[in-house]
Length: 76
Image 1 (cartoon, one colour):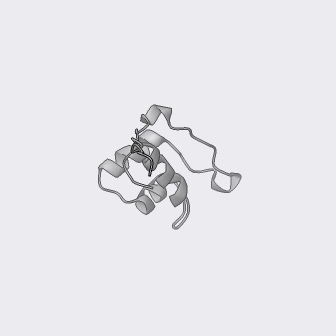
Image 2 (image 1 turned 90 degrees about the vertical axis):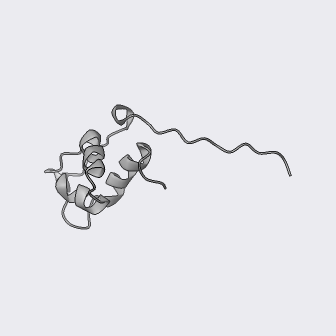
């Protein structure tokens, strides 16, 4: 077998995380990666963070998780 080097994961800075727009359906959502990271550091889970930024229960979890993975706080 070839000698493979392990890929080193690097976390993106919060300011470098790409932010998309939420659909018209969720116009009340205030999607801010720095707030998401701050809420995670306060001990909130993904579902609680999604609700705190304006998504209804059981919605927005994937977008919230994507920010935390990009910031290096959660694993894929």
